[in-house]
Length: 64
View (spheres, rainbow, N blue to C red):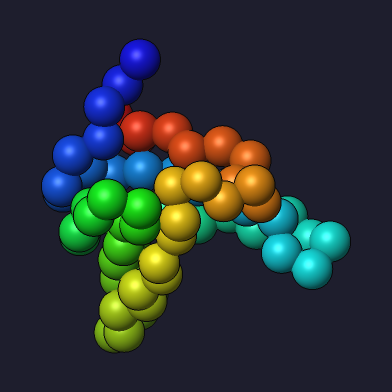
């Protein structure tokens, strides 16, 4: 089992409104129930928050 830490690169697959989305980025902050992922997209930063116990998360993998 891989433990996630700050500044790890991860890929996450989640379900939203009956569609599957993929998100790749770097973990910025980990709290008790949430974690924040930041992605550099062209000249902008995209930041998403995810709940650890969210039933819509399909997979969370660490990228080497």
